[in-house]
Length: 251
Image (cartoon, rainbow, N blue to C red; front, side, top):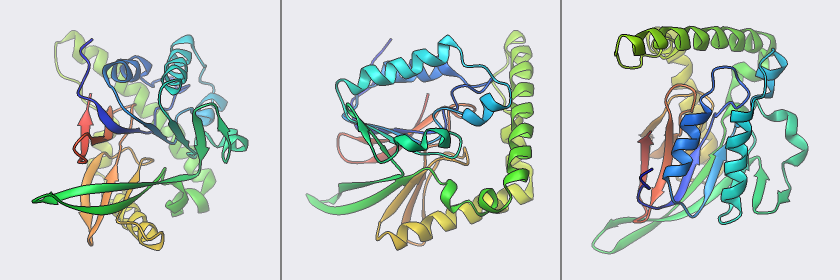
């Protein structure tokens, strides 16, 4: 496989390993294709909630964990807690080998402006569930929503097998639902604004989240807002290039 240009940092989130319709081979293809000085796993790497709902852990999921462990022999790996992998909460605040388990993480980066002028920017990396008001106040509805999301992903898989047979491109049913449901759009806007406010409280110039599976690079009220997306539908990552520029990349 062709190796991409090296990166200083690669940030991925929401792998949801253990979920029936996660995509471990796509994750492996991506990890095999990159060179990076640091890997940040921004939450929901292992979906314990899905396994409690009946999904089975398989050898293909283990292969992803094995790959990450192999990478950690050569580079630092930061594992940030997400809401779906909260079952391993006791690990967070510890370091095992070259893997550090944290609730959130700060990146100090010198960003090039022009004419050899650099400015230091401070980025807060966290999963995003801690600012999700809905998930903290309505846990039962959140669990019901997760079951609905599982169903949408199952339909995605079956529908796209048919599209592949017809030689048609991949189309995400659940993504279309999100993009066309006004309440979902309102939730996304509230989440992004809450994330920015949280970043301001932490004296940061930008924040990098996951959680809502909406990959984006944008600016809100002068604060950088980046979301690394997911590896269930979008297959995206946030990367810091060798010339200190943040980019959103798709597999």
